[in-house]
Length: 176
Length: 129
Image (cartoon, rainbow over all chains, first blue to last red; front, side, top):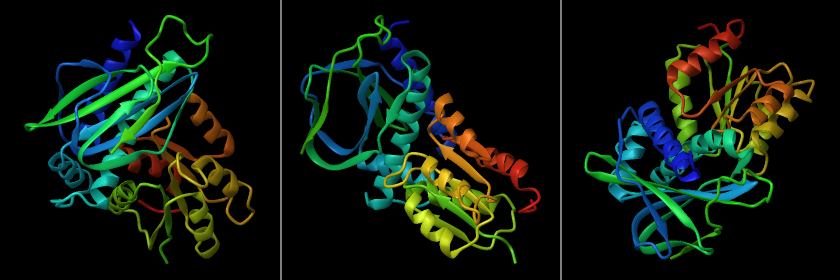
């Protein structure tokens, strides 16, 4: 299995597991795509978390404000109708659990990885982009007509780290 | 009087979920104290005597493993069971936590039943279920 397929499988498994365990919801993955270069502008919530070690990169989750409120309501058993601190915290924790699970699964193949604390951005017409020539694996999930996208990007930082698994180098920045 | 529990996580969402799960377990708990990082937890430990600590690992200022080490290095606190509840499921982190004296390890995402099952094995003498 190449790194692309490994990451996609890990994202599918981790996302489905977190949603079913913590939110009591079954979500289904859509068609996977690879993004390179300037992504489309975002309207909504984006949560980013860094990965570091012999491989480095980032993971992110993006969704509409409606879906962010739905996540918060299901996770905390509240009735969230507008994006506030509680909603952003819920999305951040969702990111932590999904990307954290992906990280743990990837560690079996890539060695130990560190995980940063999530950063959440909420706004309109903003872009997240890679400073390097990065490929992002993007896996969309549907929850009753609303789309949540899980992205992950990894690059090898040490010459001796599993030479058969390679993706482009990157660093993550946010343009608002 | 029923004992206290200390929940340590930088996510308010997880603290809220753990509050709910702990209340659902049927354990006789007096107060559930909350801290957003290890430093806050240490300050709370100076004021209260919880019978149990549930802590995340990845937190700012002082992480969960540093908190665990501080608890186990203290004559006043080392008897308190510390359960790690974290996304960090790798063998290295689990091994480090066990080596430092963690009483248990629960990986996020978790169910209420998983928390209850884990605590039952640790707390039967302290917090009757």
